[in-house]
Image (tube, rainbow over all chains, first blue to last red; front, side):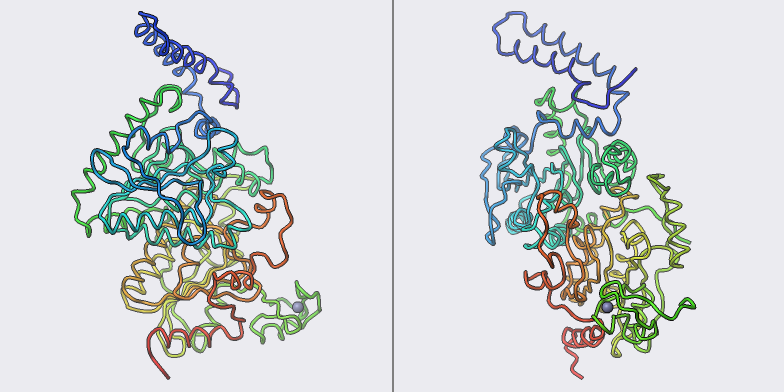
Length: 318
Length: 264
Ligand SMILES: [Zn+2]
């Protein structure tokens, strides 16, 4: 099968089927349930043709898909009474991350979610999900609050990376991330991390230390963006494909390397083809994981979290 | 040192006698440019009488991703090991500074740009854990371009691992002094290098999260002169001080005395 590098070309038949499903869903066609089921089956068949040929570049496209559910979509689908808390009380509010409290299964949780925008206007306002230091410090403020009240933390990751700008450097981007790593590693409440889209380097890790780190199947997690890696190591903007492949950024690779605990399967065609199914998967994972973590004593929780990251790395000792 | 006794300063372009630079802590006698130090030179300069015991040796890098760009990672490692006589980009040592027993980790830029992969992360973590176990102060001298891309996300996770170890050191009330040398950027800055009880830097060192070129490409503007240099960070409240190399040891010993409440 000859496969184009551009996933957005590749998925066209699936998107067309999905559009028909959406149209049927809104219609008053009496036979729509059966028709939708038949179309879903067609999506499955299309996906079975495409999915064995997906390469890391396709996964990058999927993870960055403009229709992919974003953090706020998960929060709205899974949680109630989300009360967004703005600002780091030091400098500014960072719209590239939403933070706050919400009820999840009837209990208060603290939520962090890196947020891209859906429309062009919103994308710019949210800086394409690239946080500034005040974003990391806002997250810090909210997780400290969670610790104070004994609320677990749910952290949703979806960022190309921390913002590389003059102001970000002036206000200590590196320090903001480093300090979060230190605090999150010792935070005395459970932290559940789910990478829902792009896991862009230190910008992701800055809210990414947790007792459980899961990834949606078609998300990726990487030390540097494939574009950045191509520019530095290959000195060639056209080497993005090689860089994406070489860095082993897919969920399966990262699970194998012990960096991620769990892969959350996505529906055929990816999370955006059937968001409800995706929310359900994340929901089940969250509730099961939180329940498990809340049974641990604080000491046990902290020791396990330390050992989890302590073990990461591959080297030879002699 | 090679047979040629002369060298040119990278900064002021003056022709200098190599001996004069060495006698001056590898700082240009004419313009105060700080030449990069190897890890061994750094340790020799910091410890009393230049004497120290190497610890945490025998940790070898691997190529877990079978990474190949214009060259294979395996080959890059081999070349760096030959060039530096080190196994990887950091050396851990124990010894005394001003009579105070300390653990020091010193990074070496000559080894793949001082980049942090699994070995660097492991050894920094071991240094912190040794300091914790033996109740000693920790000093890390950073000189690193950041996380090592050739180990992918394994490198990224070293940020988490090292920072978690430092959190434990902090809980135990032990001092950690972070010394930042030129350059300290990326994942190294975004983890242990910025977590010192004291963060001090050598003059004019490039220190930041993103590299200047990446920022320029993003904002499509030229960066102001002195941007991301030690003095800029001091001005913006990110460093405790900028300390010339000649004064570094005296400064660190004084800091240790203050932290340990040990007047002379
Ligand atoms: Zn000079």
